[in-house]
Length: 363
Image 1 (cartoon, one colour):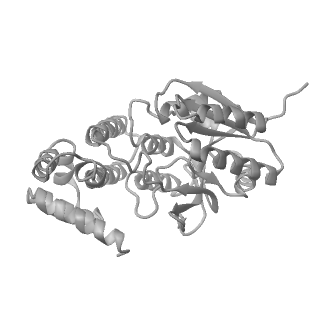
Image 2 (tube, rainbow, N blue to C red):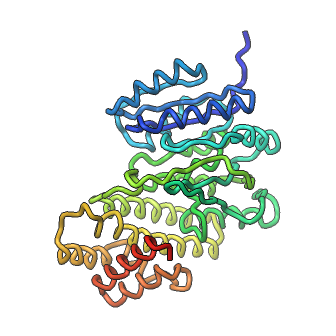
Image 3 (cartoon, rainbow, N blue to C red):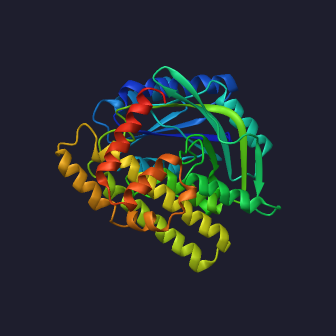
């Protein structure tokens, strides 16, 4: 008996998400039924301790196209890599277990891969769910077909890579609003860097779009991203600065390799470096929320300000504040840059609390 070809593999890292996993998997099942197919759904249980692994097994009984893989806790990057290793589909769709897919998502994806079977990456839009509010997550104003071999194709691909590092509008770093041709990833040995505990998806996509020769953008919403206050991206991380510094070391090495191997025009490499400096400064500002002034930080205000003053002089932050072109920074980061140049940690703290007030009051 000839095995039926699997067009799409959906890879879902699972770690202590018992409250959300059922909704996530059911949304995929409904979308698959709407499309009239059975995709491969891989639930990678990354050492859950809250019963998520058992729930995953129950979902596999309910849906025959669901397969569960259990492993020791190694982080989301390792879980995604395990999914890539095990996937049988021609295309890979990474879904986060606390989100859900749109009803027509699989129909939209299958239509896109039928129309662009040789594309390396196909990018879509999504919805961002903010406590009952639904916000459009749209990347560009029009659909795009970028081929390196065609006029302006590489320039467009490099522009996307720059926006992954430092987006002008909607963030491009997440893997869940994209699908990837498995053969493209395998040929280029692209994997999520497991030694990075934060921003591994940003690094993965920066490298993937750097290797891609054919990218398509479709203005169709396939995904619902749920912003959760207790998620990894929003919770207190006392080690966040050190984790970020590992990312910046990784990217600096990547930029050095581009320079040495001359894989990118000098002008565009310099543009990418400027995006790197901007993103580094943005990361420093994000640490105000996740680390320096988080409500769970037990240190006194004086100790917090001392830490801010110390960190802003360390690498790569010190270099970024020195080398960034201020015109490239968004306005709030220009204020952060100004305070850093004046060596004023207290001013940075005031900026942070002002920003928190503005966000709370919708300013």
